Length: 421
Image 1 (cartoon, rainbow, N blue to C red):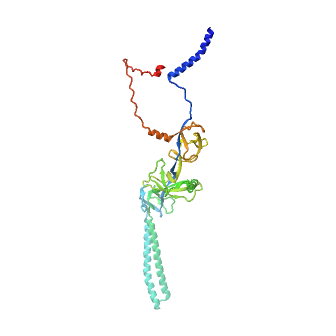
Image 2 (image 1 turned 90 degrees about the horizontal axis):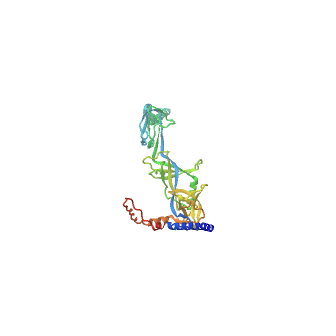
Image 3 (image 1 turned 45 degrees about the vertical axis):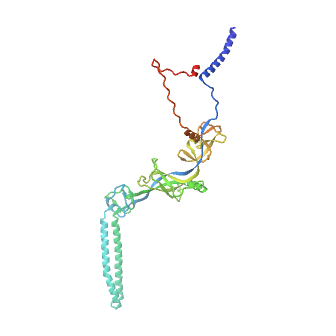
């Protein structure tokens, strides 16, 4: 009897264990896990929009005018009459060269002119008298011709003396070295007491006109050709009038003044393959100095049907290709290879691979293989629905449990499920 009884007990143990498990699950309220469905992804439906195409190009600032201050006569520098780094006006005296020798040359030329004019005063009456005496046969024709010739030589000497006096006056004036243009002057290469010459290689100083100032930026000939093809085909619309140029400084800040594109180069640099664009930028506070590295942002054209995709929806493959996940018409996730252009805020400008109306996965696409059916939730609609729901009033705070006689808080009442457990 013991053997059949033990066998029956051994068969009953699994049934009892299963019954206990079911009873425990019923007491604790647990249920079997639900069956997995299609994964949910957030999508954004792309639309076309009007976009001004900005081209950001690196460039350098160039002085609007630049001039070297050079001596035009030789001598010893006597004075320097400006402050280095200050703003000077055209015609302002900057240096003085020792004028003693040039003053003497001027005085000598002035005396030579007076002597030549005196010779004319003597030769003219004699020539007139001899001309009258020839008619009366009082003097020979030869004597009259000699008198007239002497007068002409005296008059020519006066002209030469005047020219010499003018040259001496100019050289004397050159002893005062003046500013050829208005602008900011740099440091002086020479100090008082230095010897300077008219044909020296080193300039005394340099003056740069800084308001306005040029910004020269190179653009590749390929970009220029592509832009012209798009304009000719009507894919892009040209911006009317002169293009406005915004300047980004080296520290990343935006310059307060805006310039205009004035010059487009008429030749391609054979060494770099670029065309130089020149913009004129106001510089009233002289923040921009020649030689500074800046970035110029030019509005080149307008795309009436631009398609922009969020940057978070675009990833890169191992080959460097830009890809994005989209939901096709059958509700399946598909991988698209894109050609993207410039960044516009937190979005990429799409050149090829996507069009208006495509549903791009922006969240949840990393774990979905291509071809997998998905449940698409439009992020724009979800956001609008969330904003439309008004937050309800918060429920009243729960009353803390009362303390018992021992000073300890009473335990909360057990739920029916816990009672059954």
